[in-house]
Structure formats: structure tokens, C-alpha cells
Amino acid sequence: MILDFKKIFADEDGTLSFDYNMDLSETKVSTSYPFVSPVRIKGTAVGKDGFVQLGFRVSFDFSIPCDRCARRVDRHYRYSFSHVLVHSLENKEEDDRFVEVPNERLNLDELAREDILLELPTKFLCREDCRGICPVCGKNLNDGPCGCDLRHIDPRFDVLRNLIH
Image 1 (cartoon, helix red, strand yellow):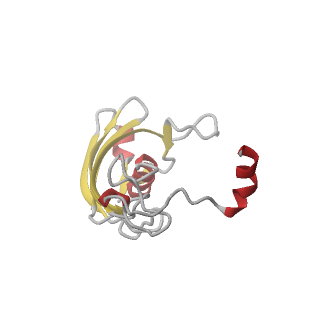
Image 2 (cartoon, rainbow, N blue to C red):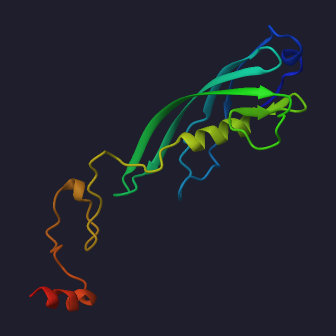
Image 3 (cartoon, rainbow, N blue to C red):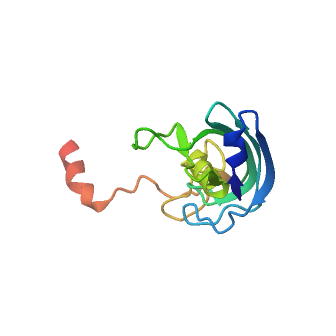
């Protein structure tokens, strides 16, 4: 969604509200497409003294395989974001505190997508104490022990074992 802030930059008391859905179903995270519902974006932009304070909340359903056992992890996420919008930055270096909108228009979809992807966890687990899968037989260890001999030592380390004995 393209937001036009021309009136808000001109009027210090201007306000713009928005509420819409964004589709991220084609966005890949790790090896899957986990956004199983549209992302609901709701917020306001308020004009201040020469800048705009943008605040919005997002909510969406997310489904991705567990990083340890590959069991499906279904979550509902809610995040809040806030940005300060300015016409231009005096110092042309990147400054994460401000979003530059030189033509007074902002593609909120791009900004929200970036915010969401940066806020997502880096590891997705079905539960905090997920035991993963057996490296020998592939059984999900959350369902119980598999009976494999996990003390099997890689033959390349036999030389080191001989040093101990």
C-alpha cells in the first residue's frame, strides 16, 4: 500500500489511519513459505513538527517445520513497529532511526515486510526442549527413545581413542 504523506507533512496536526491486509504467501523463510494467512496491518501516521510519527501493528498466522525435528510449528504472531518519517536526512549516511520519504510517499508493504522478517525468530522450535531426530534411524526423539546405539564412534576418531587407553 502506497501512503501519501503530503497533507500530513504540511499540517502539523494531520493524521492518517490505515487498516488493510498484505499477502506474504510468496515470501520464503528458510526452505518454506510459512505465511499461511494475510498479514493484517493497522496503524496511524501523525504529523509533528516537520516529521511524521508512523506506528502500526501487524498480526498473522505462521506455519513452518521445526528446525530440530521437522514437526510443523503453527504460531500466531503480533508485532508493533514505530518509525519516524522525514523529508531528507542532513547526513546522507544510513540512519536506522529515520525513514527518508523525499517524495512524501511511502510503500508501507516494503517497510512492513522488512520489519516482520527482521523481527521473526532465527530458530523455529516446536517446543523449547525439542530433542530432534535420531541421527541413525531418523525417529523423532520427542516421541520416545529409538533404541539406537548413539555411542557409535566415527571410525576416523579411533586414533584418538587409542591415545586415551
